[in-house]
Image (cartoon, rainbow, N blue to C red; front, side, top):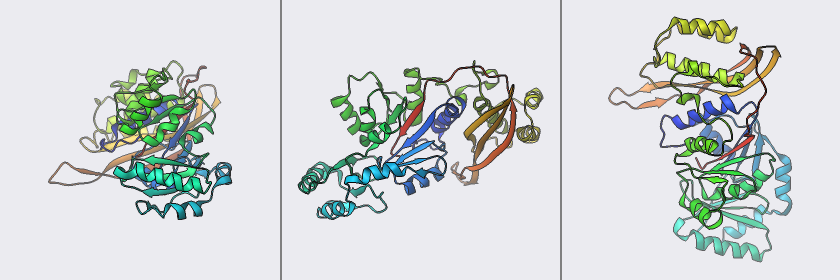
Length: 385
């Protein structure tokens, strides 16, 4: 999902706009990562990532729900049935080539390993654990700084955690430990262009004839957008890719689409990326009341105040309820990324942490919604960030 070569997070922000405008209202967003909860939360502080509905961490050994990341205790109890972490740590530690990682989940033991000898070490480890009669799974991960060996309960893993969540699914991945995701029947798959060679090798050996796996030409989040279009799962054009959003509309519009469109206009207005036009402000005031109406009134005084500066705006967790014909109560988070410091001798900038504001009492008037739901029900976004 996160492209560290994309310093301005353009592809990630494109995906954010697409998801909140077209899918948040009737689909589930799931992030799956080998990172621990601690490392995952650190990444969220650094990058403009949406809040997922479900988070799968620690190579599929931990599942949490919602903004509060409430743990799925039933999943942990299931994994603990034939699991003895202390015995596994003791036995694996006898191999000097393995360096124990701290902070792993209770149903995971992880070690750093040198890539050149990783296969040999994994074979030796597998033999040792098999002699003890331990029912475990050993997964190699080469996606983070140092390659690592993960020892999990046999019932764990990204693929089995995915199968635990029943719904129509698009699974996206780039690391060798994502292979399980593409092994689940009826799952649509996206192997982004920056996929590791180990994952591509697995595909060539095990799934090259699977028509439900797509190889987009784009990296990370941009590749996911391509794959949504390839399988015709729903809209695949982000509002951020449309130059004149004033003429952009959906046949079956909904509040999320309009909220994303408004804040994209807001960002472009403040960066002077669009021509100043008082009629645009009047048009917005005619359909907005309360919180956003006040925001629109202030636009006349801040046109171009962020021109030439690093300034991005995105919305997260848009939810709505229809309270009367043509009127909706909408709740969402607005996040701004702005320039904090700038070195006078270079053009380098330092991004400020996204500041989020919650709008709980927002009335938004749009045309009456008609029926229709997107086909995509669940997206599994699995990346070693």
